[in-house]
Length: 179
Image (cartoon, rainbow, N blue to C red; front, side):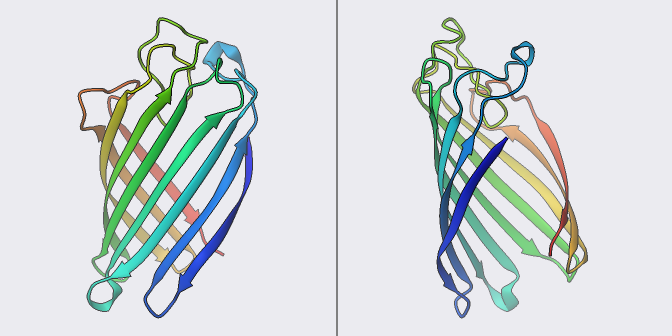
């Protein structure tokens, strides 16, 4: 479970540009049988930007950079992360998208001393031999807007670095209700 705050520092509607930042605090919970509930929790600090560009506002760029700081560095690894998102509106309902995501492990944990892989954006194993590891993945997908308040998206993601950690590939499906 996580809770936090986000603040919009720049909202330039004329130029269709946003800058926001914030933090999340993730509590430690779950069963150790599935590598959850370790440590005392995690701080997640982030900064995001967004820009609409091109003719008729058909293109969008969103980026995020952040830092995961464990409250107990012995139990969880510390990492920096970034993501880039580009989409293009094909018509009033359909968008194509591309994303690039990276995670750089800054400091290893010591909960699993001999482990040389981390869990990326899925799980923090607290692996003991991962400092300096860098993982990058890319994704391609579609978003369909059923109405101004309801949209669905699907994306296929796979690693593009030799380091794969726990990811081979994944498909993400989302349904968003916008109010």
